[in-house]
Image 1 (cartoon, rainbow, N blue to C red):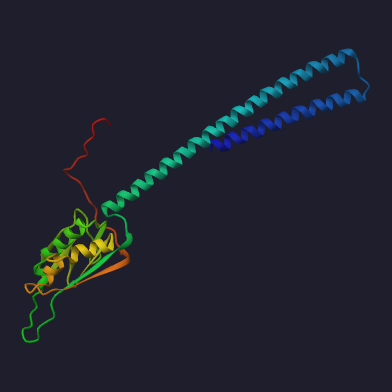
Image 2 (cartoon, rainbow, N blue to C red):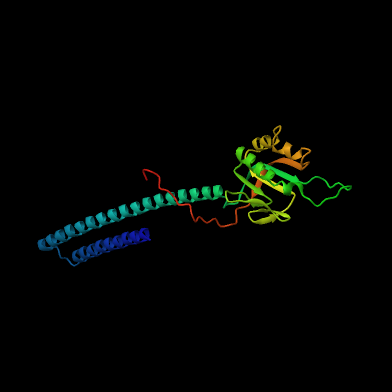
Amino acid sequence: MNKIKARMSIGVICMILGLVLALQFRSVQNNYLQGIGSAQKAQDLAVELKKVRREKEALKSEINSLEGKIKEIEEAEAKEDVLVRNIRNELEKYKIISGFKRVKGPGVVVVIDDPPVDPQFPTDVSIIMYNYDLLLSLINKLNDAGAEAISINEQRVVSQTEINLAGSNVNINSVPTAPPFIVKAIGNPDTLASTLNIRFGIVEQMRSERYNLRVTVERKNEILIPRYNEVIKFRYAQPVEEEGQ
């Protein structure tokens, strides 16, 4: 808005300058055409010309001043744009870190399911649900391997995520879920997969005779992980100012 006002002011000043010069030129032309060429008239014209020149210089000075102000406004707006852009980038980064932003990237997809049902000894008991602590161990291993975002059955895993058994379901972010559990993790696919498949690691433990779970680990070039949909409220934690700030 200030930039527009400044440009309008320059335009008005230029119009006034042109009008003054045009009137003076017409006055001089008319006087000569009427045959007025006395010494007194010439002296008056010289005085008037000096006056016009002074006004012209004053207008030029005003134009230069306004142009300087426009430049200052443009520079200030440019700095403000950079500041806003930096703040927006920082906000996006912290949204990703906190889980409040849907993200995509390379990584691994881990599918965990119960053992095949034995027709001779059918049972409704879910091995993985009653051993959901294996899911927690899997998440810890992925974090250790540098996973940047994790989800279980489309529930984003953040610092506030709870995984616990509730009746016949495993609640994740208070949402009831059941096998198969599909775990997605964004990070270096080779590093994530190697960490999970290491000898005596979490995948081998799940596949052992004790649990006999069906587990697959697949590398992916692109994985889409949803955002965290709950609202995190802090009732007790308060920010602490750093020294020197």
